[in-house]
Length: 476
Image (cartoon, rainbow, N blue to C red; front, side):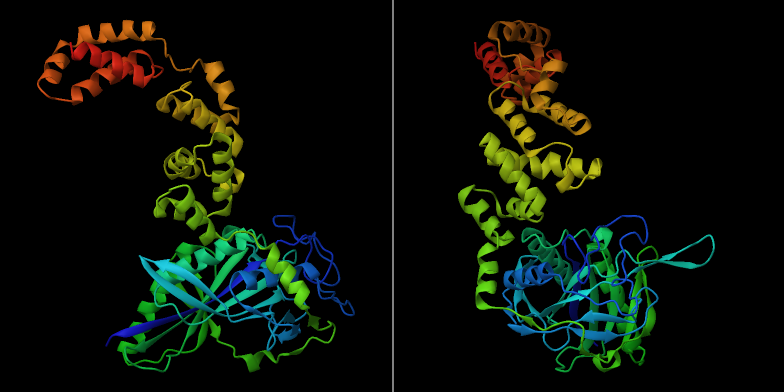
């Protein structure tokens, strides 16, 4: 039997506010355990929460960027459950009146445009973190993350493959980065996804029983977990078994998913309005001001790069996939005035170097201004393209200005015709067969002679002048 895959995602994004959602504790990743805690975020009796207004603003920004309707009169609710890293034994979330409803995200998957519906976006607080101690066999609790503000973006079940899901999360990541509400560092848990997946026989209207795989924090793990769960459910159904509604976890090292517990429904959480927090009332003016403050979004930048800067669609898509990379492109292009050259370097050397040297685009070892100056040195003829690659490697290692590297290492391009002609005469005289080959129509002989001249000049010869002088001799 053939099955149709039905996928919906719940994406949690930690918001980049300075403080937590209900207290004044610092919202910062990577600090010593339990150093950013207070009676509110550790759930002490009698401690009262106060809503961080910036959290509401960021959630509304996200909703507007995804074409959601903004709820004018909203509230928060208690979601009751016990985990060791949730000291209150309930989470403050939103149930029936989320801040944002409706909306959509457009994605392109393997050349096909698709629209993924957004059911809702609501605010809530994050839980702490359990640290399993391999030496003692015990488990420790770090509550620095408890109370960190989250938005949960719940999609419609509009995805039909792992590729759809990855494209959707990539698009969300881009939007959230561009509007400045989350750093979306998946390796730090700032952006993570829960995958709801079910199968139904092709042609059947009713959905099958879904499972939920929790806390996937990389595009690779999202794709692999989906592929695994599809095959697992197929095997169960084809063997005449029953797929149970359950919560599952993904082990990326083993490449397998495992059952954790039966899946809770809304009534299991015993939602009720949070009595310690006031309703959220948003004015039309408040929403309109946030709408006006939204920056240019990724797709708009992509269209501009293609129409105004004549970049190919593929190149423009790669550049706008990261806000940091796109900002770098724009800043470097302004410095040198040659956006096409910056784009070409991004598509080759910059992407390669980021992988080889393991740096993020928001933490490059050189600035956009420095890189713009490197392009200027090439365009002005002061260094050749091959020498520029050497300078670029030095920029990565030292962070120095390209002009300083060229001067200190003596890498300036030789454009003096007299000096170049001496080299050309020697090389041509030493390679008479190349003259014969060129006269016989073998054009690669010219490239060989240019290469030999460059080798003798250690890459510093002006290639235009070299070509001209060699051709003058060959065409005599």
